[in-house]
Image 1: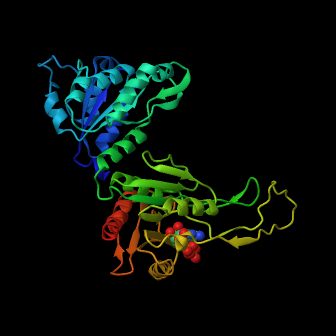
Image 2: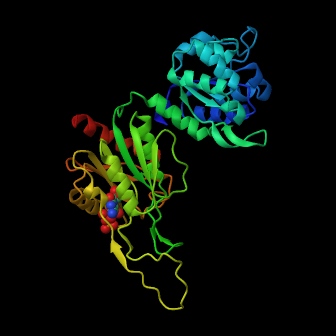
Image 3: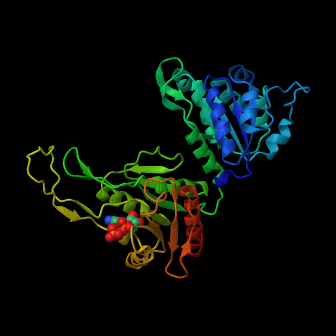
Length: 399
Ligand code: CTP
């Protein structure tokens, strides 16, 4: 959660029924290490109380500009000036109008006007309202001025109707907030291709050969690169994970599709991190129809797939993974040399609580020069940051 550490985030909540979801957002933002001050419009305060937000953020909440006796009375201009990021979630049609035209008559719109920090807006309203030309024009003015938008998403609305108007989910808002805070990070201006997930090779029209990769390590790498300012292309083989916000996702299934997507994304990129578990073999003649049970043994002839890392362009930084169940360092060294990599992340998949499917990982980083760097067991998010700590200087020296 490093992009948020010690950062001051203002969360403006305006009067949509989705205001109740802002309590979860305020809580999760606080858990990232940010200091979160919530500002409530009068209409929002009718849906959720200041006490809710104060309880989850442990910070004063600004809900009434004219009540100096309030315990929560705080200086909105000082707050605005100290902020690193201003998030408005949910933002009503009325709030978009006020931000676009500089109207300042409630704690959220008033503070927004005084705040020089980047603005991230998560609208929530009825689909017809969102699509109305007046609202679209206000959103366009704000985009033009540099505001980022999270959503709104399509789905079921509070009215019971379906359409575009749902508040973006908490993870998406936090992901985009990480990207905004990470602008100007040590990977700013760089394009990083990350592959993730486990490739699936069809046997027939319903069955596949695959592996146990969860995609968590690759997704954590994509998010970490985004939060350090990089443009990220995530080539994702199937996983059960939601796509990270703020990265360009190329969804693929087979190893051949991973190869095609990775190699085309590498053109013009600065680095490739291959966290995907690519199949080494695939059924040579997948059946177009479902194979019927015959009672006899079934032989599926497998043919080798292409090694993607070995084919990756030699003028970009290349990072591989070595998932090993034995002779970890020797095998990883051999892959580092054979695939001509700048760095390999050696991963002992026989260890409990680490590697495939786990939230944590214990890895050793090996480069062509220098001693192996054995990292302790840590979250995949933390491992991702440590890997990028090694990638960043390689990108700088390649300038
Ligand atoms: N890899 C690749 N293309 C393949 C297979 C693997 O680019 N066809 C990449 C993986 O994404 C990983 C690295 O190569 O970054 C090592 O993958 P791994 O499966 O550990 O090694 P292999 O080369 O497949 O060797 P082995 O399966 O024999 O251990």
